Image (cartoon, rainbow, N blue to C red; front, side):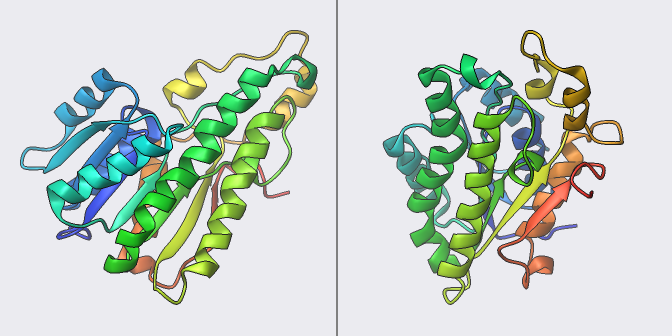
Length: 249
């Protein structure tokens, strides 16, 4: 498929996991891609994994920094002359007892997972209005329902989801679509390093996990690509769960 020939996509979190899989998927379908991540080495690995002939730039970006987000959008447009697709995928997790969450930990989760999405969307939206483009934000099953020991993460991902819905309405007349993907367990470096808090109630912890084995990053990337494509032209403000029935009950 060449659904994105002539299109330009900016992907945050492109250094690993779902972000990398998304960048590779969009590029494989013809998109020119701007890869944004805080980790320069990981960005180089993603660039090396792109198919021959893919056009891409790497922009080291800390999404907690408003100016850095604006600079990433500017670099993308300077190189490619346009922006059609923004994929906000950078994120972190935190599993901890409420009373053990420090101010710094809470703020870091919000800064990366929620503020970063706001900064990127605000910087990109003028260009997306020009191109009648779209945004795909990475929420989570944790944005759809409460999860034990995940209060900070749930709050940040629920914020992403409501932010997505608000933008979908605000920019509907400008024909900019805004959607969210809500994965459950996915086999990424983020989940490989998942650590349970001390004295965790394992019966409650069991509700965190889907009925099926965790998804592959490429499966989530396929959903992102669909929502970013013209095939999804009538979908906006949606929250697409990919969680093995975790949130179905």
